[in-house]
Length: 193
Image: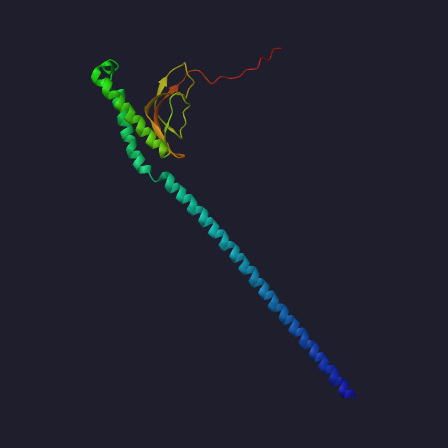
């Protein structure tokens, strides 16, 4: 009977060892599956982020293509605008009073205005430079002009108009900039009270 009890206790011990091994094997499988799930979740999140980045990049490229597709054409059209402006400016004041010029000049001015309006429609704007402070991002200084009546760095003459397309520079304005002159007004505090 003792042998039967020992045998029974031995089988109970064997059975509990087998249960412990089965439980630890299940724990390893669960841990392995949890690690795989975490890895797959990480890969999914990264893939979703990459798709979102690609969508944003494509949207930005589409917008850039829309805004700047006409850049080369616009640069070529600026020569036409320049020539119309030169034609208008080349007519002397006394010649503007003659009957022939009175009929032609308004047509040239209207053509220039229409060209500028069409350029505006495609987000191509003329840079108004005269009287403004020199900005190296928009202007190209061609020469300096002595004028003590204005603050240094003020644009006094525009040799060639500049243009921007959307928010980018298409062509800088070629300008003459004031040299010397009065400084920006400095505020002084009277220390005597």
